[in-house]
Structures are given as C-alpha cells and as structure tokens.
Amino acid sequence: SYALEWWRNILSRVRSRLYSNGGMIVAVQVENEFGSFGNVADNPSDARYMRKLIDEARTILGNEAILFTTDGGNVNSMLHGSFNDSSVITVGDGCSNVTYCWEAQKSCNPPGMAVPWVSEFYTGWLTHWNE
Image 1 (tube, rainbow, N blue to C red):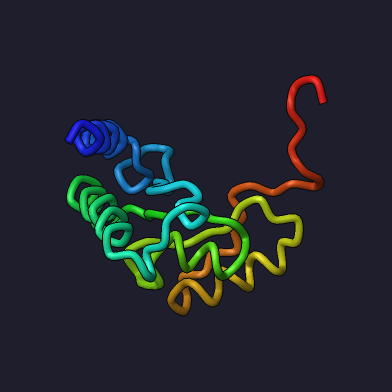
Image 2: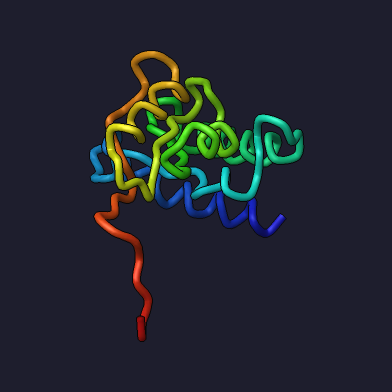
C-alpha cells in the first residue's frame, strides 16, 4: 500500500538520525491518539494495523529504537490505542493533571517502561483563530 511505502520511506530517513546511531532523535512516535478512534484491545483489524506499524519500525530501525504511541492521558484511551507490552511505550497527552497521566502510563506499560513523560501538556485548553 502507499501508506506502508510512505512509512518505510520515513523510517529509512530516520534510522541514521537516531541517537543510538549518533543522531539527535531519541524516540519515534508510531501513532497519534489512535485510542480515540480505534481499539487494539477489542478490534483485531486495529490490532493488526498497530502491530504492522510497530513491526515495520522494528525491522527498519532495529530493537534499540525507542518506539512510542501517544493517547489521551487516561487508562481507557491508552489501552485502546496501544499494546501493554515491551514493543512500544505508551505515553499520555492532553492532560492537565500530570500525576493522573503518569499513573495511567504506569498501568499501561510493563514495569520499568513507564516513562514520566507527557507528550502534550496544557494549562488550559486549545484556542483557535478568532476565539
């Protein structure tokens, strides 16, 4: 598919720029907020999609690359958007309570892989032009 071809092209460009290869990229985001729309826990098609992205990233970037997904800063979103295994780290976004988000990450990642990291932190909510 064209999407898979694009993903492979991007990953190939990133590989030499990874921190483990002397570059400045420390982690690669596999998906963004998939748990808001998909459900890898209950939908086999969604799980295959996510697994394919992760497998391609591992094939091209290697096992040393840190892969992550980002979903809403709650357990439900994280469980719908990512796997609770060591293939990918799950981080939260859009949370105004960092402690709550980190606790959710601890329950959605294997022990020792729950990085205290919020990919998007808002002190309020977004505003748009003319608001």
